[in-house]
Length: 117
Length: 120
Image 1 (tube, each protein chain N blue to C red):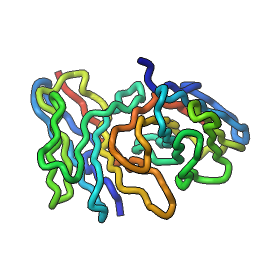
Image 2: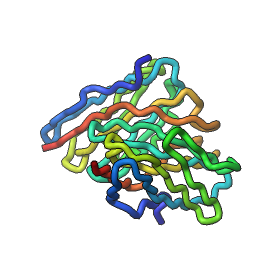
Image 3: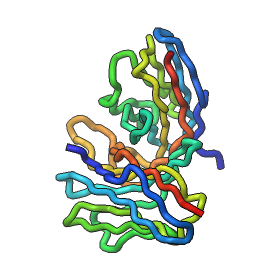
């Protein structure tokens, strides 16, 4: 079966542009997470969806970051007025379980590498 | 304070030898999970092994085993019989219980990683 897919794999944006990053989770997975991974660092949590509900957005670094998952499957992470510090790899992960309880690993996509020039 | 600490930025191991990657963690939550992920240069995060805080035995998955020492709050990954394809970045991660008031997810908190290079 297909894993988590993300598009585009690479994105170059000029400072001030808006970008949209897409995540297609594994079919039927309830939970969806977005992480930001700076160069040479581990991923850091951005936001979490349980189906279409965004239950946690405590990791979003500013109000320029916005995420949605309107039908409980595909998710989009949007960054408005990009800044150089937004340059990072953005990873999406999905899990078949409810993210507020239970166990189970998260399955990661290949990430989108965003470079802001 | 760091929740997950990986003190080895880089490690080298000879092919077919065993290697231990260190991970210590900090939590006051009695119920937590510990994970190891592998990230090759292609970028995807590959799940390797999981250890629950209440598990009595150390987790094993093929050539991977987790040396879980709860009192010392360490969860080291042991890779036996290293292969060239094991060369990658390795991340230790922890999942704690969410805050009930915020309804936050049990997201993973990652360490800074260890770059493992397997030498032929």
